[in-house]
Length: 468
Image (cartoon, rainbow, N blue to C red; front, side):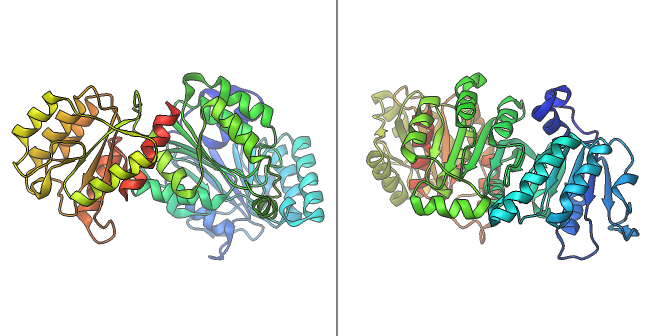
């Protein structure tokens, strides 16, 4: 597979460097090692196991062979062109490495090492030297103190988490000022059928920063929704201008920490970040249509909600359920969140009375009873009937613990043929019930996000409705 060329590849500056870094022809891993507990070893392993189709050049003075690849003994011996350099050497050796990478024409370097601005005055001075050398050498920097970058469509896993490579591409683009949040989003969304375009762990942002990454993802045609974890915004005017001017108002879900004085102290010790006023930033987010997540759960669920690609006209919600209790819980959660439980029309009730058994409830929430577990046709016909009601802006379907994959294709067919958002809730186990896990993955892959509780589905719909 030939690396994909991006529209940004020919542009100067940050966009062009990022284009080459995320869709490289060749990658050099400086500091590649045979030691299995070494970052350079992990990154080399990630590139190989992720299936990167371009050239991979491990660099280590000892030479030899690593994971089946010949080791280059010096950066000066790199063949050209190399688009991306992964720098996994101790912090004091990074400046000289960047200088040599610049002479070899490397566009962008991801500096994995920590020990820079996040550690205090000496680290800030070293980071300043890093930036000075990089600018002189003409190399753009990702990091330092980053876990790396991933582009799923290019099969590039240039991170030290080998498990994050090799998935099917999707529309979620991530920029995070924490590597662990990148990992959390990736695995939590992936297990629910979500797919990714690009993941960027920003690290300390000595050079390229949140605005550069955001601009790239907003312009990337493969990214349908942007998920962000933010501890500070270094260029707030530029940041909010990008969001205000974004074409097509691409959805952006942002989880911002450091909202309290103690949280701001913690953020500073993490990446050297200085956070701003919570109230001011929240007000600006509302003005530019950013969805503000206030928790990890909000970030994951809000991101999944926007993968559906559908927007409600309002906040009138319908619930279809097999088990009764989760349907009642969803109703309570919706009303407590300020949403409206849709009043189904007489025509809808009449149609449901012909579809459902006599003991079922034809009001909203629509309770199909235990019949849903053994009658797949009843499920998809009920969903189709409720979605056709003009009083319904969106639908939550609660999947019972005994539900099977039988009839799932019909449910997906009904959902994708109409414009209203549909969320699913599973009350079964994902770890112990393989069939339930298959339902969740299949639904997510067809843009029907699945949630683990009724309340989380309602909250996700609320985030979707507020944004619209």
